[in-house]
Image (cartoon, rainbow, N blue to C red; front, side, top):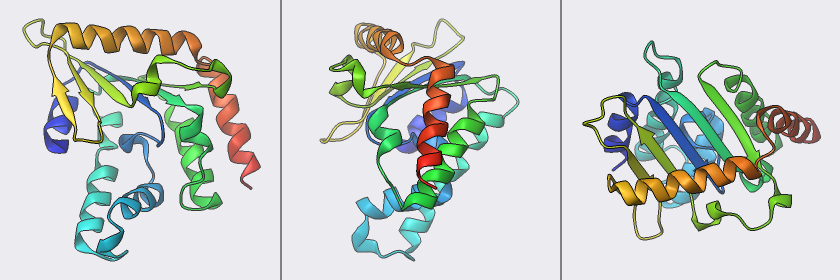
Length: 190
């Protein structure tokens, strides 16, 4: 499923992603990715080939942010995703600084939905909306669930997630205040 998602992302015109618990994979530093993946595959051991391959794949996705025909990205993150200590304070500080640096790219927006927003539509779980230029290509939604990941091109489902994303955007701190929060949290981890 991940390879299919990566293929869709590579031809997208716009990607809107909401994440509840972790920094989105495409934005993860190598150290952060290793900590997250190792948590899920702890039976593999820190030096396993599987762990190394998964980290490499995750980090390699970063190239899409800088490619010549890179889509526009809007990352909406719950405050929990940027506040949770992953891999230790130095790993998390580096990760937050990377988010700030990536948000300076003209095709990338990073916004935080603060704890003070209360209950919100993103609490159903993480999702990603992938949009295409060609009207013959239906936009899709990628949803991570405990029972497995789902990719759907059902227009009603895509619209439902697009509406949820719009409501999350209204509840967010906005791009500038989100970056200020990221900088403050990174500084507190020093």
